[in-house]
Image (cartoon, rainbow, N blue to C red; front, side, top):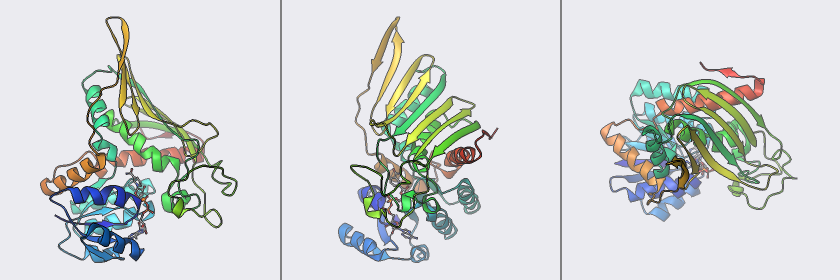
Length: 352
Ligand SMILES: NC(=O)c1ccc[n+]([C@@H]2O[C@H](COP(=O)([O-])OP(=O)(O)OC[C@H]3O[C@@H](n4cnc5c(N)ncnc54)[C@H](O)[C@@H]3O)[C@@H](O)[C@H]2O)c1
């Protein structure tokens, strides 16, 4: 299957490209980046494909069947929509788009064209997450009434002043960039329950003083511009979401004046609870014969990006609908929009 990678930055090089290279059915025929050297470097490094700077060139080639969209969030919708209209199947990185309205437009075009549109909610292909889903579906936790997600870091603002911290490009900060994964895991494991109400507050407190921001390491620092760049996104967020399933509460921070980072999700049921250590294993807490027990299952975890790309290639071939389809992911887009709207208006949003 001939595929193309549009956007040859971090996620393309660390996840999409190596996973396509490992898939015996996929052949990368284009590397596309508006920075031509990045596409050329990929051709040289991976020994395949053509380097192009304009994604329309990829879309005009009838041989290309599927594309990965690995660009910043501001062009997800445009490129994904153009690709669908050109008859290509699409795997677009998370978040689907900057706003719910953009994501809805993508979903509409997917429905019109009938092509595949999956979003890179890679945790739906994570072995720990899938085991938790099985435990919950199998009743091991009983009725799950509350899920708490904590994605907090002492100092971890990416590329201060660059694309990640500019609302016009990213759509938001800690919530849309990290929270999207956490909310998606919660929704997936709990069976994508219908959302009733959303309330949230977001804060832009630490990153906005770009020159005074103290830190040790910064990821995506190559895109940082502390002199002339922009910082107008949430560096922390809190929220509560009522669903027809559990209540979801969350605290997230790219930066906080607490010297500990927390990256976990707690699923709390009346028979048992699970703490997922994000990106790793999980611990189950329950009772047995009147005693408190806990255990951390050990198993071989496959690379979730490889699982995601393999599933994408398979679904392009078979037409099977994946759990990362825009029809599912659209709910998280709506929830995140509602948190941002609630924060702006300082009241609860009813999605009932
Ligand atoms: N699934 C995950 O866990 C995960 C992790 C990191 C990033 N991401 C997502 O991946 C996307 C890219 O992030 P990144 O960290 O790789 O960013 P990046 O800046 O490293 O790479 C993006 C690349 O896209 C290129 N680009 C921009 N506009 C383009 C266009 N119109 N046509 C072609 N190329 C274009 C840029 O020149 C750049 O090389 C973001 O949406 C981000 O949220 C997902």
